[in-house]
Length: 412
Image: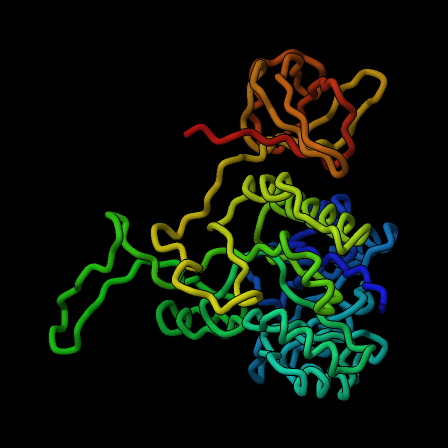
């Protein structure tokens, strides 16, 4: 029997701090956006200098950096692309993610040594299309979220062995086919395919009958309405073995506009799941603690999307478009002194002396501890850390690595 290939874990990085977090918590590669040509203008994104620094950091740790430039470009966009790609290539990226054939041809001309990954925006849902992109020179295809595991398996058996297959395993789902949505353009004059989506799929709607203009009939299950387009988030951590057996080479986590804490917690859970599965794929069972950790990041409820069965009415969250958010990030460890047990913490949200805080580490289980020792950066005792982005000092009973997270349950 052919041995199973260990998949790459690919994490989102909306800025340099998130890139470092993804690497620290176990990602094999990160995908980032430049200041142009990215489908996530809400992310901070990377200047050429940030890209250089990010690529250096990733490469020092043996990781890879992929540039998302997967907009659907107009003439003015494509005229500027060659210079942009040249600068990003010089900065040290390992691959570029594209959805447009014209940009693909430019990439081949400007940076022939650069690997090209074909975006999910290209709507790749069949084996012949995947092979056609490979024949043109693509290194990898990113499957549409609308594909099932059996379809991906059939694709893997058909296409060239050298063609890599990447698939989303976690994060937000789009109501439109492979994210190619026109609702935002029509309703908010914000072009989703140029990265400015207003997310109208998360809005509340009323029903109006053609012969009764102006009469808005509520569509609701409760007093907040019904969010009929609002998909739950994808979560495949219980099915890691099935994804590997289907031939997925890279497991992609969605979320370039999500927080550092989201990146840390989700990457860590999938890192542990992949490693556990590769030890003995036949005996793989999802650890309930992984799911518990994924419940502690903001999400809209979870679904397996199209992978196992055709989605039903249960795949939508009709009650609210708000995220389920039960924990707040209150700080990030920037340094730790093993001799004294004191950590320098970059404060993100207010917390108090005497408060119970959970500590999430890149490796190992989280632990909870009451904060008895709390000072400002000069070592002066304080009762509350209430200056976001400032450094405070705490003492912990267990050692912490740089990048460890402090979180607190949100009070109801």
